[in-house]
Amino acid sequence: MREYNWQQFNNFGYITYKFTDEELKPLWDEVKEIQDNFSKAITYNHQLAGHLKHEYEIIKSKNHV
Image (cartoon, rainbow, N blue to C red; front, side, top):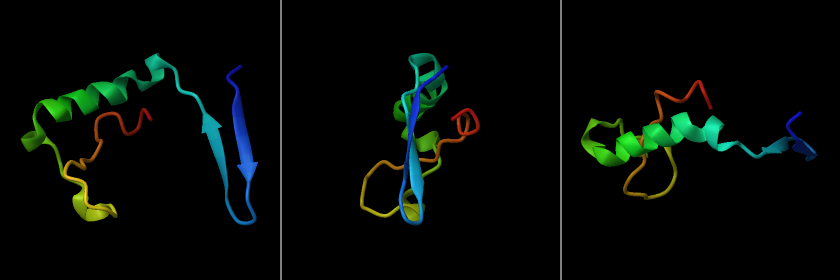
C-alpha cells in the first residue's frame, strides 16, 4: 500500500504523496514535448498569476495526473 499524509486546516486540508517515476512518466514526456517546440503548445499565461515566460497547458497527461 502506498503511503500518504493528510493534514487538516480549519477550512481546507492537503494530502502529500510521493509519485513514482513510472507514474510521472506521461507528464514528463509531455513537458519534454512542449520544451522541444514551444510554438505548438497552448500558452497558459493568462490563467496563472505571475510573470513567467513559459507557462503552458498540460493536455495529454492531464487525466493521468
